[in-house]
Image: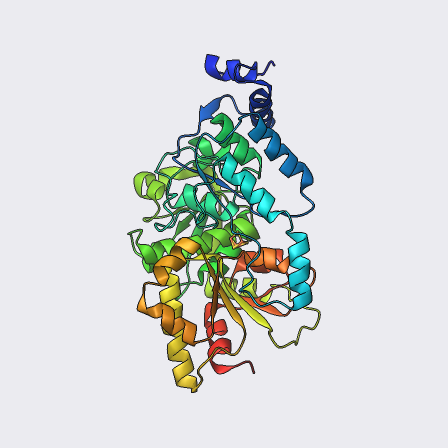
Length: 427
Ligand code: F3S
């Protein structure tokens, strides 16, 4: 195959079939993908692990299962072990009997799909989470690593907080990059593509809610790169657990309410610390964020429940999956709120979602038993997959995740509002 890209002899040989016909097709797909985006070359994937976005054995994905099987049969396995997005189904999460039955049919290929993933290179059975970069999981790319990932919340985190280099690839293409070991060089892999074309100035009187700030910036800049001034005033200048957790939720909102794949936080994220305003491209646009602007953004979220005045039937927190510290913090807050209100249990069936690896650690902490006493359920599920079930999508679900709000019928409330509802009841 001929290409306008400059390939190394090794890459050209793979393209010409040195590693078999199927591997040549995988390489050809990646080269074609790069050509569409004007890539000039292919570069090696350098991270230790990959990450797959497609985690669900949806009955309608027959061609994907066939494709994976063909790759396995031809020995085209991933050159790096990979983690994977959360599983779609957990019997521990409350569902009507009929909805449970529907989920079993919808995700009837889950077992087959997971078997294929194990054969292709799944890291281990704890690997199912969108927050693979948590220390309990250990898929933490190094600064400058080139990745082949697709999960939008993980890509924006890896690029921005870890300083890795990854485009917003699609599912399957990210697996192909891990199989052939190369990805096209364009976008966020280049120094130029990492420059900010928006300057965001934070002029709020208090620390903004991460989810609303991310949403506001995402909707304004869409797929561009923002350079944010003023957030380090609240988060400090060290990427500690609290700052990373904030940026996890902030980034997921920028990536889902817009299509942000990289942001820089002045004085905090690694490239902003290293290069400062040299990262800002000439002619960058400006967005000023005040308390009023954040209120405007929040007030404009549509409520798409069938009955807008319905009493909430369920609450999901942890999209992206919660960190260990978030689980502990929520335990403290719920306990204090319930005590103050004279209640023992949360007033709405509530599910906290986190990875199995984080949950294992949480179970060793004293807060675990205390949280269980409040009636909260902890699950490894992806709430979006739960809501995708037509028999669940009509439920009056509340969440403080702007990603879940964007992709489902769930209604957004801030963490503070949800805490009040859970502990004091819904008025
Ligand atoms: Fe993670 Fe599912 Fe939310 S993949 S970011 S929990 S939509």
